[in-house]
Amino acid sequence: MKILFYLPTADSAAWQRDFVRALPEAELREWRAGDTAPADFAVVWRPPRELLAGRDDLRAIFNLGAGVDAILALEHDQPGTLPRNVPLIRLEDTGMAPQMAEYVTHAVLRYLRRFDEYQTLQRERRWEVLEPHPRGTFTVGVLGLGVLGAHVAQTLASFGVPVRGYSRSARQVDNVTTFAGEAQFDAFLDGVQVLVNLLPHTPDTRDILNARTFAKLARGARLINVARGAHLVEQDLLDALASGQLAAATLDVFRDEPLPHDHPFWQNPRVTITPHVSALTLREDSVAQIARKIEALRRGEAVGGIVDINRGY
Ligand code: NDP
Ligand code: OXD
Image (tube, rainbow, N blue to C red):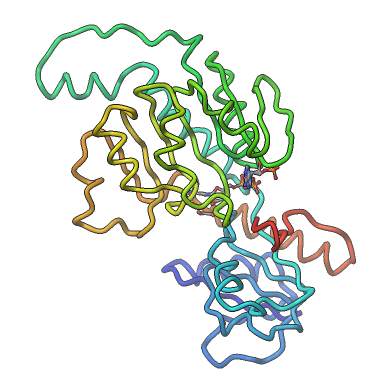
């Protein structure tokens, strides 16, 4: 069994070592430009077009992340890039769901308990008690009820805040009021105090965090974007913060990463920035999941996480 590997990060060698340990019978090789030799599986993150184009010999392509937008952009820009009849398989959770729940819960509780405002008061040496936000109306809306969104929504609900969730098809999540499809989008947004984005980036969801969306939220709402920078219309966020329609934003993902030095988000006191770390790709869990799926496919068994290319996630 031959595996093509491509991961353009500094820890690529450690990943390769762990894959070889998990699949000792495999011949794993790092893809380099011009490599068209046969392979059974590809394990990749943000691959160049030449790696995938014409690779009809593959039995599956594994994406080393939950989001497949970078790979699907290759297909979108040049249809026919992805080999036909070769499943594209993404990571499912692999330890990202608990990390995402921690990150979002921390940000929501920071806003609920007004720690962001106390931080400002501390800088000004002001001893002032702020009126607590009533928990019962501090509604959190989670966009996306997939592997990550559903876990985040359930975790938030355990803190006693009202939680809503939004998905494409109807979903049921314990202790979460769910909404589905465009027809229910405005009802989902209405009066939300904290909007959390965990949608995949697709043609339907690009720019979804825009002025119209912000206008439907409660006045002074907060935004937490942990999905993709392309979901957010950046100028609309800056305008909403300036007008007071939004009070604050916590952003982990950006249109341009790393965020350029001169970007206005850096200087905005209402914006909290982290460098795409809300849920890191954990090597041990990810290698184990992919190795299990490769073994299952070789036995002719079905596996989860297959991307619907037409749907975009
Ligand atoms: P899933 O595919 O499991 O879930 C996607 C959810 O979004 C589903 O509930 C789906 O609806 C919903 N959805 C998709 N399109 C629409 C639409 N047009 N309208 C309404 N709902 C829609 O993805 P994951 O939970 O695993 O991951 C979500 C995203 O998180 C990833 O795509 C990635 O971009 C991002 N991510 C960010 C990380 C970071 O570190 N910042 C780390 C990992 C992931 P339905 O249930 O009906 O299918
Ligand atoms: C992912 C990511 O999609 O890390 O997995 O952003």
